[in-house]
Length: 166
Image 1 (tube, rainbow, N blue to C red):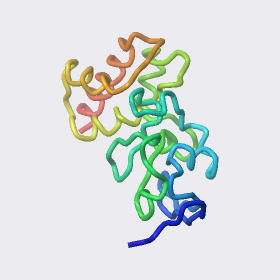
Image 2: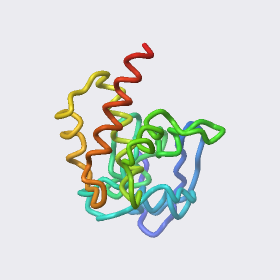
Image 3: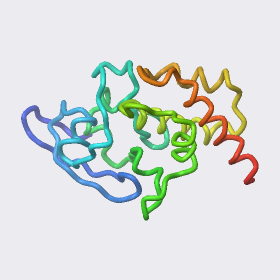
């Protein structure tokens, strides 16, 4: 097991949005700070810094995680996905992102990256979710602008669209 020393920056190597990434982090550096400060990932939003609001949600090995509660060194050798992983290489929005746009599922947009990451993972596991299941998944996210109606509609539309494409 790697011994980490306080005050010393350690290399952290992992896959970020499908590409190798590397940076240096002190043992107590949060993943949210590491992604923003070391790797320039401005799409990581930190709202509460307590894991309550969900704005900083990323996928680590395909599982939603609060980057404000995860240490950067914990991602060594793992796969981390941010909202940038959803769009195509040419910048075209994913079907889920397009549905959010169509349904006005964002206003200020601060919570949107985290919600999109949770929703993407949720849809990977549940091809045909009910409205109640979508609302339960969203209960881990705080959105102060939208009232969630457009968000729920966008997620349900994406699920129906993906089911039709199968």
